[in-house]
Amino acid sequence: MTAVAVASAPAVLREYALLADGERGILVGPHGDFAWMCFPRWHSDAVFCALIGGASSYSVTPIGRHVWGGYYEQGTLIWRSRWATEDAVVECREALALPADAGHAIVLRRLVVCAGSARVLVRLQPGAGFDAHPMQRLRREDGIWRASLGATRMRWSGAADAGRSRRRNTLPALELELELAEGEHRDLVLELSGEALGEVPDADAAWRATEAGWRRIVPQLEHLAASRDAQHAYAVMRGLTSASGGMVAAATTSLPERAREGRNYDYRYVWIRDQCYAGQAVARAGPHELLADAVRFVRDRLLEDGAKLKPAYTVCAEDIPDERALKLPGYPGGSDQVGNHVNRQFQLDIFGESLLLFAAAATHDLVDADCWRAVELATAAIEERRREPDAGVWELHNAEWTHSRLACAAGLRAISRHVEGDERAARWLALADVLTADASARAVHPDGRWRRSPEDARIDAALLMAAIRGAVPADDPRTLATLRAVERDLTEDGYCYRFRHDERPLGDAEGAFLLCGYLLSLAHAQQGDEVAAVRWFERTRASCGPAGLFSEEYDVAQRQLRGNLPQAFVHALLLECAAAVAAGTPAQT
Image (cartoon, rainbow, N blue to C red; front, side):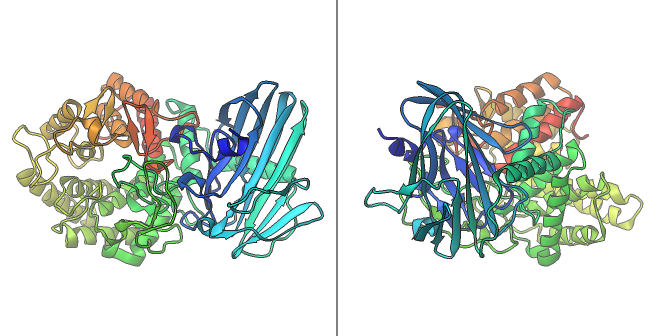
């Protein structure tokens, strides 16, 4: 198989790494292939989409037999692909340059031969608009390649000796075969812009600025358990967070949760719930920048939309488009879908999660007058809409989901602690009591645990959050019964599932839900059972690939990641668990 064929073949998800600068991201495969990148923003059309069956990619691949490895430079999303060939050890250091510019992406790649001499094939084959706009007006001027990709301008420096590919029936490409001796390096700098390009960046200066940027925006977090992974989780979330403060749920679209079952979604948007989870997790670790980002984005959405707050937005605070299919094969087992049907849903719990976020921020004095206006709007929305069926945390059919009501009760109780003695506290606590009493009267199973809804008697791992977030006390009999039921009915081989879909074994219906494994860790930490908390924390965080990235689901039997990558809220809960385990005390009582 040729180096081109190897680089274009899809890999299992655990073998991809993420480069990100907050405005967009790149998935890097094990053969040095950039299989996914959207430009200019997360939700824009892709310029590299080989991940879902397109032709466009950008690869740096050793020629001949080789084995792959790689690692992140600590506290950054600077990735080093590393290959051992028969004659050499070669690395490719790669990053999206910082500081980020929403309209101008700078992609840095530095090839370095660590030992021996190496032959490497470099192939650049972009296609904007999911391959609709290949390179046009391609020209080389002063050793620098320039082209247009529809409305996007492209410039590629460091590859003066590249030539046009002669391969037929595919997008235009540039190819370069390099021979490098030990100690030699080659810088490749790719730029994409919606405007006229200015001066050509100096590679050394761009690398220094990027290194300094990551040092500035990612804290050390040495006081947390598994501090290296906790810091990496923070870096991933920071990489997914735009200058607007919005953090996308994942970098990708259409990666299947279950092969050939139509469960393929576009997660390149900002979910209010996920943003709140991230902010609460960061608050446990300290008053770091991502907490203020989360507060700002959620606050502004509430001020604009009030009781009509949408479950998700683009990072530009725009509405999410309707779902549509592309004319691409999709990732094997998946499809080629963009847009998301969540744009038509009502989710009650996001108002409670917003209050929990603001309460967490208030502990660090990060709540301003506009935040308190947003708090009033969220509490008013709960009062107005609490009887409406909603799609719930798992975005299913509309029902009176118990988790949604208890999430609102938790948020009301949490924010009321910051206005003690004020009439608002009494009002909000009274509303929380109403929500909890209604759930107690209608949604408690005969065995004493919470049930999913008054009409659905099943157990659901999301119900662990009622006590974790403070809707009810940690020692409430319903809390203890729910924890026992989740462990008894929804766990297998050390992993936790959301709920039982039907009579099939858990793993036959869907993958283990990594968020739920971390919820079990938090639940046991709250109970003071440090051994169980650490056990669930360690088992769940071991499900990542070599790059330390997590997707939403995990196929326990095949030990493979499933769904879009990386899933931000899983990294958020890893960070929160790292803080809870390090504290060794209950998360909330």
